[in-house]
Each structure stands twice: as structure tokens, then as C-alpha cells.
Image (tube, rainbow, N blue to C red):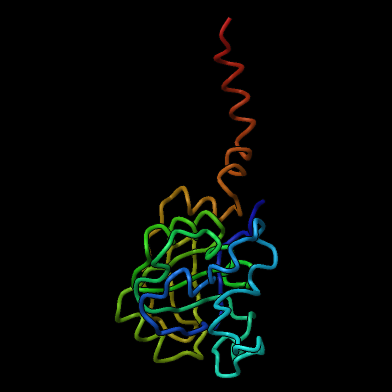
Length: 195
């Protein structure tokens, strides 16, 4: 499965200024039976988004902001806890394409990048600007590795491994990336064929 190509993303953020959001909060363990990504976004932050009877929790930022917001801005150490890939699946299936935080759990960061989701690490000062102005549109430019506000010259650069940057720009999973180079691989094999 390939993902949407990621080049420039402009969106208002969903604000979750909570630290240490773990993968069990992102996707509760009782929903891990799914072996496909489709539809798992409905279970994203399920216990925060729903009341005990299953109705929408009207005080939830997700009910207020809805899935049209493609950026999630969260407190530090986002994605800590168990190494469930379903957390990245749920965020992506819900419509979130980037998560901004001052720090990410390493395993979550890897799972996100492998599943079409961009984790953007910013400074605490920049994060404060985001939390203080939740209605401002944010622009993430993956080509230039920058994050900025649409109404301000304020920006920061962020880091991403060049290979993963290429994968996100092309909408590739790892195998898709290899297949995109099949012509080069075939030519190499022809030139180096063992007699």
C-alpha cells in the first residue's frame, strides 16, 4: 500500500497539550485485533473522544475540530508506551498527516515514518506559539524541512532522514520505494550477470 504524497501541508492544528501521550491512549488495546488500516481511525483516542455509552464527548477537541484538521500538536514524549504500529495507522486513517511535538518516543517515530505520517520535532518556544494560537494555520514544507505559520515569518527547520523524506515525498512504503527503482535494478543485474 502506498500513501498520499506529502509535500506541503497547510492546516489548523488539533491541540493536545498533554505530555506523555502513550500508544494506549492513541489506540486502546481492545482495538488491536484489526489487521488492516482501513477504518481504524474511528478508534483514535477512543476513550477521550467518547463517553462511556459510546456517544461523542462534546468536550473533546476531536469533536470540536473534526478530521478536517490534518495536523496534531501534542505535548512532549508523544507516542511513548508500547510499540504498537496501530497508533500510527489510527492517526493516518483519521486524516492526520503530521504530528508536532517537542519530542517523540523512538519506536513511535519509526512507525509513523513507515506509515505515511510525519513527526515534526520543534523547540519548546515554537511549540508554545502553537499552543498559544490554536486557530492559526500551520504550514509544513517537507521539501525544505520547515514548519511555519501562514500569517507570520516565524519558522523552524526540522530534521528527517533523507531516505524517509524521499519515501514521504513519493508516497512510498519501503517496498514501493524499491519497486520504483526496478528499472535500475534490472539494468544492474543485466550488466553484472554471472555466466
